[in-house]
Image 1: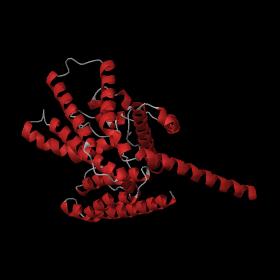
Image 2: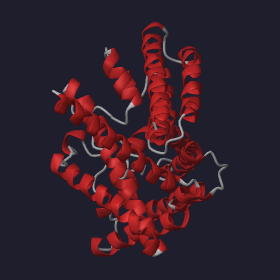
Image 3: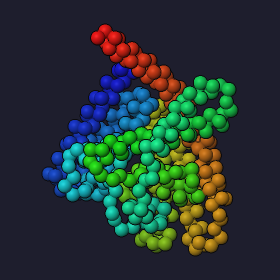
Image 4: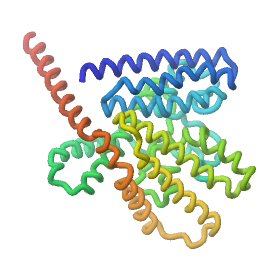
Length: 358
């Protein structure tokens, strides 16, 4: 555990140094291919760095933050696009936005989202979630970890449901900590990362407005919008969102395969890609049917809500959640919790001995 923490510190010192270089490149090199050439070595480095970590928590978080989100932000930055292009952005804020899953909230006119609908004005989408909300979810996460002690007595589907809740709570708490850290020293309002995904009424609502919005926000300018511009020429503006949405899910599937490779160092078996291909196809059908029916024959949310959540959980249990056991993430995570408990116990005993000696 101590050796992994030392590797984690070394990796992140390298990340911070690299981002200082990127900030300098942004001020010295004009946007376009030339800046991209100067940034590509950092992009390649960020793909390599997570391989130095084996912890599912430290390694998984690092891979998500820099190999996916960080690299996509740098690629956009090369062409003066994305969240790193704010005029006169300071070095500390540049580094924070580049390596953490945050996005500064800006007052902008509505624009098309990756599902082909207008986005809400950012000022009307402030997160209503506060410390109490995250405290409750942290408590639930702790309860889930304790419940794992009785995992041998549980039905496999109950175990997968616990894994799903574990992933959701852990992701939301980690993302909230990153946002709170930046907010505390910058005073900036940041966009929320989750918006109660369990209340989704459609796949479009789930993926576009509620689940892991940082990924949605980074895939929109990197994949969806370029594909939308090209598709508008080929099939027209009305139907252009369909191939654009599907292309976005293809890229998301590839990146999730990469994330699981970092977690388990196992060759992809394609199941994660199939999960996103199925969802991309079904979401494309959903958007096409809405455009065809023009809002007619809408089912009530009491019907669409359970159907949406059931479809997400069902396909997740089938294709997505089993990847965590395939990579033995669950076993290694339990070992880490045990090691962390021992480390905290030993540290507290040392502190008590110091105070008792005085």
